Length: 247
Ligand SMILES: Cc1cc2nc3c(=O)[nH]c(=O)nc-3n(C[C@H](O)[C@H](O)[C@H](O)COP(=O)(O)OP(=O)(O)OC[C@H]3O[C@@H](n4cnc5c(N)ncnc54)[C@H](O)[C@@H]3O)c2cc1C
Image (cartoon, rainbow, N blue to C red; front, side, top):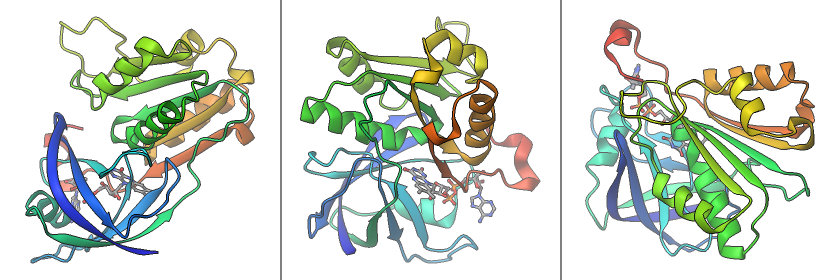
């Protein structure tokens, strides 16, 4: 379904992560975890073009639609144009699309997010909270630095949602970071998921991270039918300056 998104304002979420808030015209129904294809015509378009998929990071109950994205040191022309949007400007989108949605199957759920792969979980957890469906959910969320997008939101939920736990792990921690310092691996999953065979796993993040977690879960003996995943492509580093870009 075609929809117009009228830009309202942007908000800094964390280092290199921004949210963009829109009024959807017409307002449309979506399921938490779904995404939109956004078209942003702009000058000097690079080879990646004018269209991007973005998961809706807000819950369906929230009045403004929030898209949250990560910026790299050398952004695409699309991301530069997104950053320059003026309040009131309108972009075209299509959707909602996708099956990466929470299915209340009665099992404990484990949400595994790599970096900006957190966006569908932000929407799902906001949705479950607004509906009062406080299911057993463990969020394992990996970031490169301790400046973690949506951390305040998840910590607030966990404070009064007894069966929701948020575990943050940092791959490039400074000495002040007191928490876990590792990529999400079999050891970390075993440590925080009491019975992996009883759980349903939801995995989202950049392509290599999702592939790695699926392999790890298979090695742990998790039935692939209980691993739901979404891959965010496009975060591959430009070859000529790969070493210079902080991922
Ligand atoms: C279903 C789905 C949902 C998604 N949801 C989200 C979401 O919620 N949030 C989100 O951020 N992303 C999401 N994505 C990914 C998103 O669509 C983009 O692919 C991603 O943000 C990368 O954007 P970009 O191409 O503008 O690159 P950038 O983010 O600007 O850059 C990423 C990397 O590519 C390099 N690069 C940029 N431009 C070029 C170029 N022209 N040539 C070579 N290298 C280049 C950069 O230097 C950097 O290393 C989703 C994707 C899918 C399929």
